[in-house]
Image (cartoon, rainbow, N blue to C red):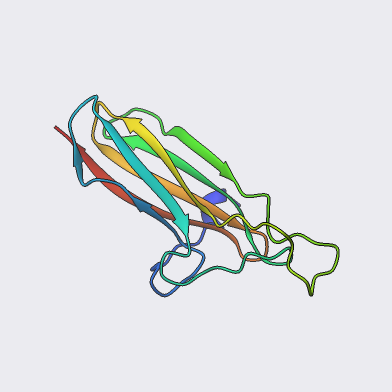
Amino acid sequence: MKIGEVIKDGDFKAEKHVPTIEAPEKVKAGEEALVKVMVGQEIKHPNTPLHHISWIQLYFKPEGAAPVVEVARFNYSAHDDTMNLETPGCVAADPASCVRVKLTKPGTFIAVSYCNIHGLWESAKKIEVE
């Protein structure tokens, strides 16, 4: 079995586990651009000790033969943790993060998220560089 065989995808408007990528459609080479990744853009994902998004990783695949580059890794450790599961804890971290990037080539961002119950999910977004 290969990892690609277990990663799921879907439409984030209908599936709460799919990570979304917000980034400009086009950027100038070497100019800073903000990229936001999140789970739960349209349908909120539970954020409890029993059901939560543990992390999101963001990759960039430049056009051509270059390898995939890991851009960022975001861990979400606060899930309303408490000793009593019926009483929410004092902090919860929603799975949404940003990173600033500078690109020299066009390519595709790929986001992978991990739900502790429903496994791996992915999405992708192309970006042009002028």
